[in-house]
Image: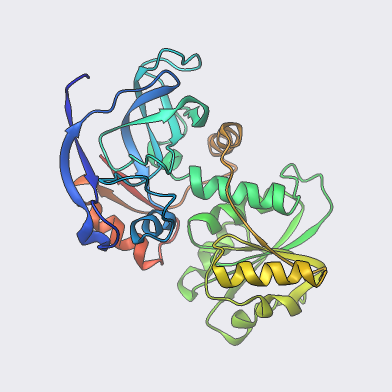
Length: 329
């Protein structure tokens, strides 16, 4: 592969949206000792990809320009670094590339061995590529932030999931129902039946009065909220929380971080908890196995060729995708 050129999509500055993306021919990257080189078969987009382009995560991401965005990929290993023990050329895998490096909108990418997991034949490249950020976020929010046991062995909890038809939300509904939970979910009118099909017990159209008030139709008080939407103040959740209920906020803004700090200072039992993903390979492998076993599905909103990555980028910016947006090299 040394010296070979590949097609990639990158941007050279902050902002620009889909028009800021540029198709280039660049050298195929070389894996370091703890990395694998993948021939990509699918990549999935996440809202954080747009935030990075807008400069909302500077100075952390990206570290430098030009930058090839997207972290969630599936493909075939074509070369392994000297220290790699778990994989060999020819293995099919799912991987999460580091936000520091990105690299997913390309024909080839390098991934760290510890965030790369095997992909069985039962899991398509597109299904696998959808999992890393969205699936791991849903998994971590449910199991660590709210303490739900996905084998169903824990105490019953009432959960609210906002924006339940989106990337994180559609995984969160499915995973929550593996635990001992009653799930109320919000989404747009066109996705009510879709979210019910994922297993939600109650579904609210967020544009109706009850949906805007976040009230459970059966009068449940929520032990936890997996908050995947934006623009909803904590005061909207508070009346619907159980005495020790908490809102796990997946898109923390400055204002919500201040609310969270204030709740802690006042020793309120109802808490707003900012969420930050800590990706782990074993959790990604767990999700892949759930997909293999038919207990979790990646719903694909749309697929786009790498040559039309701008179309996929416009769709993720629009923010109304049902499930995951996939780009295929």
